[in-house]
Image 1 (cartoon, rainbow over the protein chains, first blue to last red):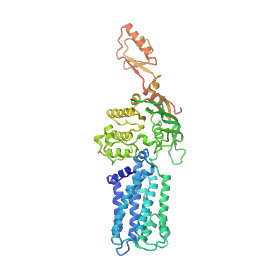
Image 2: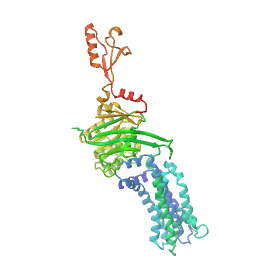
Image 3: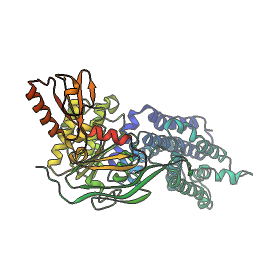
Image 4: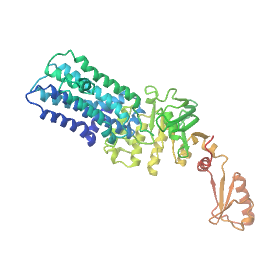
Length: 233
Length: 309
């Protein structure tokens, strides 16, 4: 697994397409939300939308693209002929993306925290971990339906925009759309991060963690059905 | 010293494999391999030959554990070929299509394959063995097709596996590179490595294989040593006729470019007859040649067979 992860780190830097997807785009998203924030408001809403959109772009879109690319070039097939497990192959492929993404989120939230520190840091960290797990599971599932890295630009759109919508809508808690916002991937997570960052009652925390866990589980289950190690003949 | 034992390394019994071409569609099914039986012994070099689409690569991928057979049984090194812990560390695989990452260097690619192989070796030693030392820092994207095949080959032989699968290992290589690959194969055989390979170069199979299996339409149609397979084939005698063709004491099959052509299964007797006839008349049999048929003619005959075994 380590050897695959090291190779992927190298490729992150060397492949322009992946570098743009995994490194530059999430940073731009994070920066855009930070620069457009209300400077008088608490930092929670910006933190929530930053985490969800940066993870959606940096982990979900990048991992889907990477997996589709590795399958198209028969790299996955070659690795499957080796003496390592499927889990190690997939972990080695996505760990670099997740690591880079967590580092990006940490920097973005660090800048935000310098002005408005989170009230409940452990819960913020738990939400970030859950966001990464959810988007990794969804990436595995989407990659199963994606024939090429070029196609990933389209197949990732529904989940990405659903997460974006969930994150943006959740900045205004309550209202008639509460159930919908919390059901969208990232909606409940945004609300959870807002609560953890700004401080407030944590009675809703289990309810807000649940959709993320369900999405992660659905992603893994779908991946078991749809994920392919070779291009379809 | 090369040694072939009776220990079975690969055993396939009544193996079939069907591709589903459309999701859940029975109409879109294509049976690539049907009822195949195959045994490879330790230390042997077994060449799997066949017409295009005969099922060679599918057979190899089933034996490698890349595909599960629809029916039948496959045993490799005494276990399931897809067993990553017990079997795979003992097996080297060279796929027909590359699976290399363009942005990695040759050295990085070989080191990565070695790291996941379950075997130990040195990158420098492996690159040297396949003649790629000078290309170590070159990215795969910048290699020629032949050089990429040598990277594939390097990955397959990393750590001197007990068994190596090679799918068309010399396709795209120049003659010198092909010789270099075969030199490595022969060297590994002296260390006890067993090989199962596919190739379209029949002369390579004739020269290096202990046994040859000829596939057609998903079945193994012929199997044996090259001598076995060519034993009953026709030999061709050619020479410039010294007199009228009708005077020649054995049946003539025809003429080609001014040469008499005699196709025979009793070559020694016919050569003796021709020599005796020429001596008796004081003839010189100009451009006299005897061409023993090889696998190519067996192969061509195979191609004209139907699709049913």
